[in-house]
Image 1 (cartoon, rainbow, N blue to C red):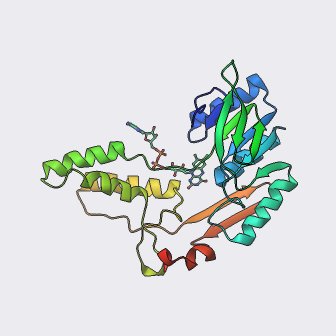
Image 2: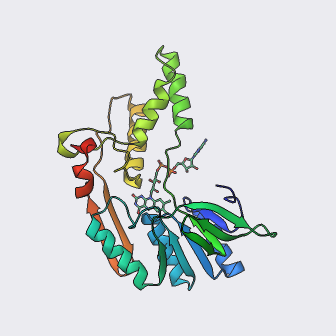
Image 3: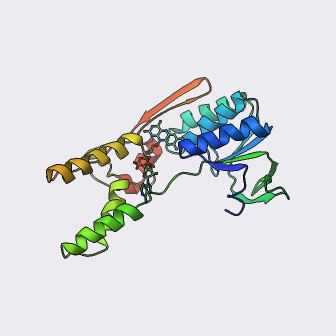
Length: 234
Ligand SMILES: Cc1cc2nc3c(=O)[nH]c(=O)nc-3n(C[C@H](O)[C@H](O)[C@H](O)COP(=O)(O)OP(=O)(O)OC[C@H]3O[C@@H](n4cnc5c(N)ncnc54)[C@H](O)[C@@H]3O)c2cc1C
């Protein structure tokens, strides 16, 4: 997105991002934040910024936050956000970030209006970065005489673990939530295979999520009923 590199725009995917945001809050005392993306990280940062007294606008591409949870839960989350003065802009996507002469984003222009801001947080979800693993595996696969593409494909499949519901394995992009547990387990497994030379495999995962949104504690395991009805999950 143009403007993503401005100094008052941050992703939230590492400790360095967190420290940068904290430093910015201390040094610049921003009053208005726009958060783009209403997943669980969007929820957590909305609450954290609100607790520090910022006016928070949360721009989300769907009507309700937290896709993948039950509809009624998502309605409750929306109520909770609104009751804590989060300005939730539903069914909107960001078209541009308008920068001032000092290199700061001052307006987030969306399909549903323009919002003034002193700070922008991008919590838009993640795609697996498989370059390093794919490259390494490609190298070893080539040496073993197999297709150079197979390493990259295998790395991607490891990042999107198969679901295990209904006794089936499927690579469910939409129902996927990258989690520390999956990452850690697959990393450990890779080490054991490397050191022990064995054939340990990661059998898959069932999505589990827990998040606090102001006064609500929300948890879900498995698919939502809406997801379970989709042909791809049957
Ligand atoms: C704000 C936030 C909250 C989260 N909350 C939760 C939660 O409550 N529960 C949960 O389960 N998960 C949570 N997650 C998700 C979880 O952190 C990730 O799914 C998990 O860390 C992924 O693990 P990983 O090992 O695949 O990748 P990472 O943890 O991103 O690790 C990749 C590492 O590789 C390093 N690296 C990249 N390229 C190279 C290179 N070329 N050479 C050397 N090193 C390289 C990176 O620096 C990094 O240290 C959260 C994530 C965020 C951002």
